[in-house]
Amino acid sequence: MAPSTTSNRRATTRQRRGGSVLAAVVATAVLAACSGVEVRDGSDDQAAATGEPTAASGPLELAVLPKAVGHEFWNTVRAGAECAAELAGDVTVEWDGVTAETDVEGQVNLVQNFVTRQVDGIVYAATDSTALAPATQGALDAGIPVAMIDSGTDPQPEDVPLYATDNRAAAVEAANLLAEELGAGEHEVALIEFQPGSQTNTERVEGFTEGLGQHDNLTLVGQQPSHSDVNEARRVTEDILTANPNLAGIFAANEPSVLGAAQAVEAAGRSGEIVIIGWDAAPDEVAGLRSGQISALVVQNPFNMGYLGVQNMVEHLREGSPLESADTGVTFLTQENVDTEEAQAILEPSCDNPPVG
Image: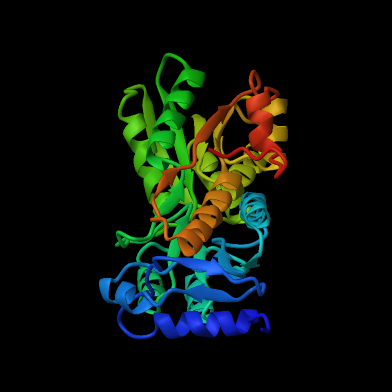
């Protein structure tokens, strides 16, 4: 008996997926003595009729799409995804993404391309919560399960999980950190958001605004998007500084926004004078934290996002386990705790000792 190839396995899987009913759970599926051959007990038809997901064995190909390639945050997401694939065994991660988070149409096309290729599962972060909703539904209609990391869609299908930070709660705490650093007295502050339309951007803006409402001495005098571009973040921060010479604090809501805002503050000769609360933990951000240019960082666990997205997708495909959302956690870094063991596990993740939960 000759072993089945990956292409043969996928062809069989696609046939089960075809039609309006999603591929379903197999009551029993074992590997025959002939390696790679999938043996079933004939219960596929009954399972398909019930609409239950089918457990799959053998090689898997997963598409994993960040919002954009190149940023340190997404590189860490990739490391987590590839770690989970390595530990699961016989799983290929197809990593692909647009070059800028503003390229929403490009990401829609990428998702559609992977649907056309009939990958086994798609794990991705939506650049725009509304625009990507039809792409997610298109994958589900084709019988391809989807898991979201970092950012979901609106609407978010019930059977599509989200592995992400509780952005709203963390942004509320960012406002509290800013208030604590500024202390008593009246203070003018600014918000550098990143990509309007992105679910994570919306949640961070809403959370920070909610947090500010708890501190009557803080007044928001400027709010601009960076479009996740360092140069744009620097430009809009310079404009805010010019218009508001008494500006005392800034909350920058993602990596490029933090770096650009810090550059603008430094160019104005006000480093250490203006309090910056940042988001994410790229090496330059951590360096700014150590030097005192940045007062605190809201640090997500991007490794965990990629890891859980792939791990749970594999378990769903191979074991039929349900896909359920999870909070991937957040850590607030300051000069006082940046060198702790917990902080270093997040900043320097390793597949040998992954910071996952």
